Image: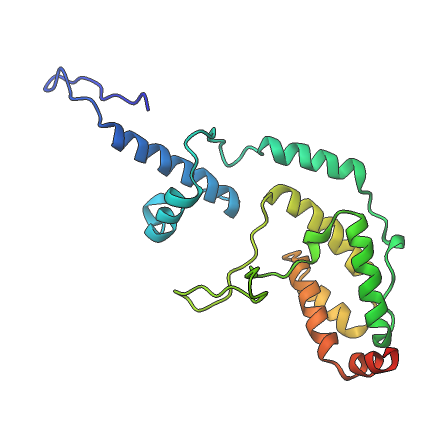
Length: 215
């Protein structure tokens, strides 16, 4: 906001920059650092979608928040990571092992309870945004596709997913479960892993038969 035009030989006393132009420049800088942080790399604002910029400017930007360079972790991320590392230690023995398709239902219940006790419930949330009113996936009106789930704290989400994926690798011992986990090893997307596991076993015949037995 203190930006000024330097005098030149031809223009000794340049006119001051309008405040609106300064404010727009600040918003562009804030958008650059926010979305570079989400991507994990520097982005080219000349190619940035206008619609996404307008959404950021209207709904996300806060003029009273300090702009933190995208390469620097936010204070909340540092504190959250430190807290997580102190309270959670990788120990797959606390999780029930899925060795047979028939025990999917008790396995799911046990894993969800353990996840909640570890305060890791976001790790098994659906991989797409859900409408709280209809409990259905939110569809992007422009692309017609589901809107991916976006964690509030990217740094904390990454370190939690790295730890929880190891748990899933250890406990998922059936052929189908192993295949689903291995397909998502590179992305470490535990949301997608758990979603695909639930979809498969809820639609499988063995799960339906086991449900009838429990009833």
